Image 1: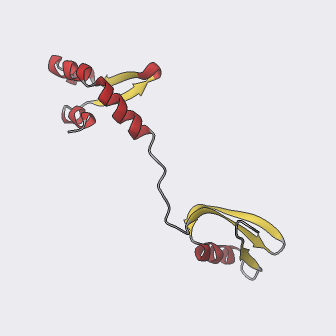
Image 2: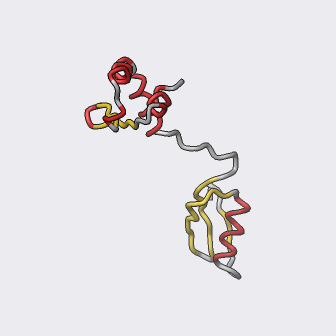
Image 3: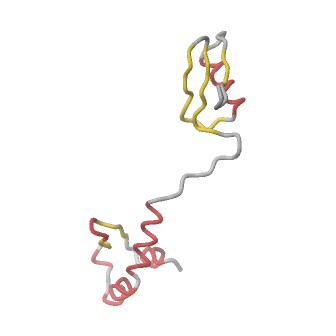
Length: 109
């Protein structure tokens, strides 16, 4: 069982405060036995909380980006925010600027 799960089982919350301090609450739910367990597992709790607060960014599938450089007429723009494939980015740009000459540029362009 993960250390955080043990705290949840006892209806407790935890977070890392300044100075790498561990805060656990509500104090009414901290029995002497739980307090000793927290002391014994402090490092493990801090590691789990740090990992939960610093998640790795999700990996996008090959060919999917969150930003594409596009050309609309003679202007270069960046279409950003939503993960798109090249074709989806092209369709999104065409929908935004109907009738315009739209091109999704490669990194080399």
